[in-house]
Amino acid sequence: MKSFLSIIFLVFFNYSIFSQQKINKKDSIAVIDVLHKQQSDWNSGDIDSFMEGYLKSENLIFSGSNGPVYGWEATRNRYKKNYSDLEKMGKLKFDVLNIFSLSPTVIQLQGRYYLARTIGDTYGYFTLNWIKVKNQWYIISDHTSSSNE
Image (cartoon, rainbow, N blue to C red; front, side, top):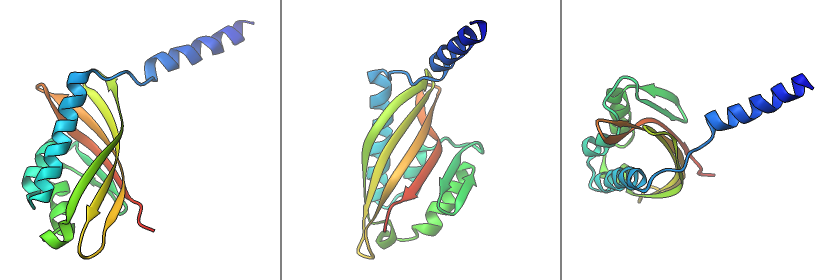
C-alpha cells in the first residue's frame, strides 16, 4: 500500500510540476505580435529585422533538417545563406496552432508556416520556445521542419 501511495504521489507531483500553464492574454498577444512582425520583415526581404525576434545570444538554438545551429549570429548566417534573395524568400505566412506557458518567463508556441515562391512553394511546422527578458519576448529555441512531400 505504501508503494502505491508513493506512485500516486509521484504521478501528481510530476503532473503539477511539468504541466502546461494557461498563458495570460498580455503575454500571448506580445508573442504573437513578435511573430507577425517577423512575418512582415520576412516578406519585406529583411532578414536582419526578422532576426530581432530571436534572443541575441549564443544560447539560441535553431534546429532544422540539417541539424542544430547554435547562436544568434550562426542562425542569421544560416538564414542569409539559404534565403539569399527575394525569390528564395518568397512570401511567408504563419499560423499559430497552440500556445501555452511553461513558466512565467517561458512560452512554447507551435505553428505552421507557408512560403509561397515562384521557385516552388514550401510549408511545414515549427515549435518555438520563447523567453521573457527585460519584459520582452524572444525566441530562444526554434525547431522547424519542412513537410513537402
